[in-house]
Length: 450
Image (cartoon, rainbow, N blue to C red; front, side, top):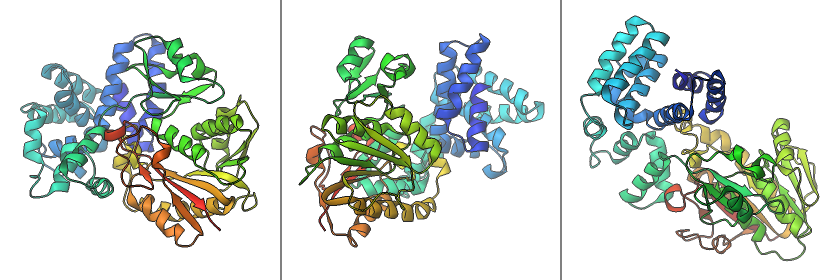
């Protein structure tokens, strides 16, 4: 029931599972009839169903006598929950069917419960591999549609990721598979307030590992709870993907000509990168201005920066119409709003919610923020343009378009990510889940020349 409630919230309210599920789990625990194993199963059912929704939709469509669009969304959610239990877990067939039909009786009524039972009986006749052979077109006939069904991504996203990644079949399959894996929980030891060694020592052997690439990263073992870490509760550490940490570190370490006193995070919410930058700036005697357009997100930034060892300022301001004067800063970061296609591991529902038309909505804002960032940095200063999307329309195309109108040049970002392999031809950098174990963060470093 809890998993169904979460799926309905995702569908009806455009909610995100990572925001909906924790309070539902907490409420269930408070009732006293819900333990850790129940919570783990509910989490797997929600995220597994969302990740594999495209595949399960194709299988359900082959087992019903009407177009899938004519199946009521709550019924489809119940069917997909049942399909995931049958095809994506080790739950015995009879238990999966029985539990799902019981759920259908409660939330849908007896009549539709019979329909659910009949469909699940059909699904249970084959395993996942056999079903995929039946419902996915052959790769040689339609490669993108084949990959879309097999790896449960919309076809347009498969196409976009493949264009950005390049290469043959193996690479795109590895990427799509990585998108369907549960990501590690990674912490950041905020510079000047905590160290990775301190957190690792406090957690003890077997519960956490150092980051792969960032000296500030700590990877929690499966089932690790960030809220149980003292440094996280105290605000000296936070949850932050290692790719985001690398973006902030690369900007902070980019070579400059001249002074290094004033830094700007122009899209600072919710505050993860700003907290890193503020600590790094303080160690050099520099000051960070963290700007965020939405006041409530600016409040989150202020909370993340509280306790920083040096001076900083947080403002609620529109990064395309800033209150500061041009040429004020030595370093500027703009992690621009985007489709989020680089974080599908963490927000699997986003792949079904996004549309190609969303790119048109983000494009003017992304270009405007980058132009303002370049105006805000002094001659010789450096701007970091970052986005959690590998889509070329949000990465290289934006940078190329803006550079045609600005006196600026790209800086090779690859040497600023020491030890990180497979960074391509540069000078910009695209990180990948299957190659680096991070979100698909993009970074271009740009020096203003005039």
